[in-house]
Length: 310
Image (tube, rainbow, N blue to C red; front, side, top):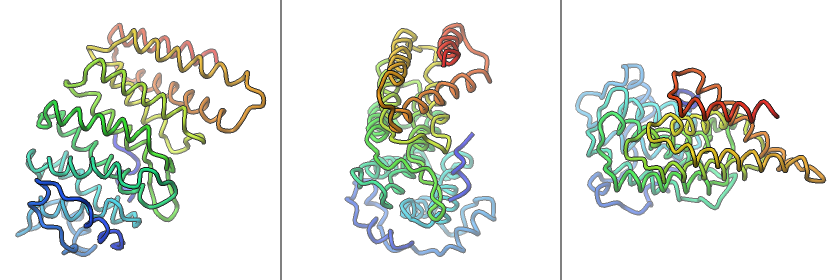
């Protein structure tokens, strides 16, 4: 099931977006001021996401992409993300090769303003990660990224998960921010790809552990569950590396066992404990909803045993 952000999301951002470095493939679509107003995009939704007559889906997609960093939640989420997601996955309007420039653009967006926290730059990063999750899901149906692009995207996703400093979930004015959840969605889709190697499994699990260990507060908008879904995608693979997973799990548990020995306890330390606990609980719950092979069943039992002792 998609994010709760999927159907809930000023033009001041657009001018800045147009100053981004150009990409060879992306340059073929000139970047100009948006041609269409909010009513135009709303009408597309009302008309079941059909591409309007005499309009180009790829040109409209490039225009929508300029809204991914908008602080206006309707433009960013309800319209830009929702329309692009449908056109990429549910009712494909963009050819596979037409998606490649977006992979390049949105991957580059993950690095813009990465050292900042509490600013609007996180919106473009976070929603670019969410759009890349849509592309990764599309690639699961018919592969088009290829090994090189796939692994470049995986590297960028892992780097973004571990380096993002702005971990806000929801803002009453700006709507969903949700960088951790959106990146977890991307990693989940990438983890289901046949191109994933066992080394890649290790890298994703290590990145998730690092993210859980560095969040200064307890996630309160379902981020732990979304990370658990990425882990589940690894555990249920035919080539699942159970030996590495068991070591990873033991390391999480050992880190948590040390929390209660610290004097005094700190909110940050307790936050890491709670985030790991909630992620493991969500992992067991998610795995209980499907038939598991013996290796995944054994992994689930190990997680359950750890939770039972908490």
